[in-house]
Length: 139
Image (tube, rainbow, N blue to C red; front, side):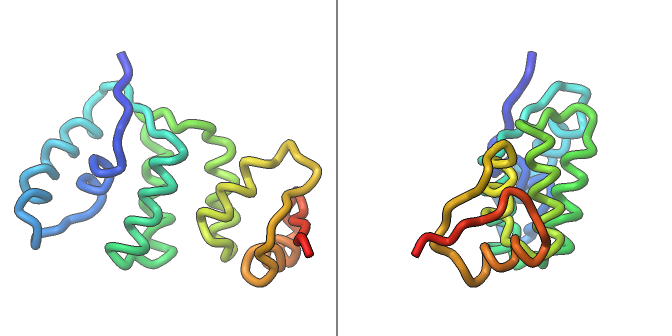
């Protein structure tokens, strides 16, 4: 039996939020589940949302987000959807690519190129890092 995890379960596990009584109550439940020997699954979309939540709502910096996501990937009882793509995205994220863009880009590794209108932050960063596939900016 495998249990899929929602973003809020992972947030309760990784974020100590003493200002929210519900979070305080839920955190031990998340800990008990994640630290159990039960087989757990996490989708790429949950990882994408978790990164946004950690960075955007809880104001975690890139290093803190990377620590959380690497820890999640290291859990032997957690199956990450498309682990190879997520790992590749984390490497790009560590190099400065926004995580959402990094995950999209890593998902197209079997393509010859990726089309985008985002020339400033995304396409130029991918080119500077020499990542494949190249990003073609539509003009």
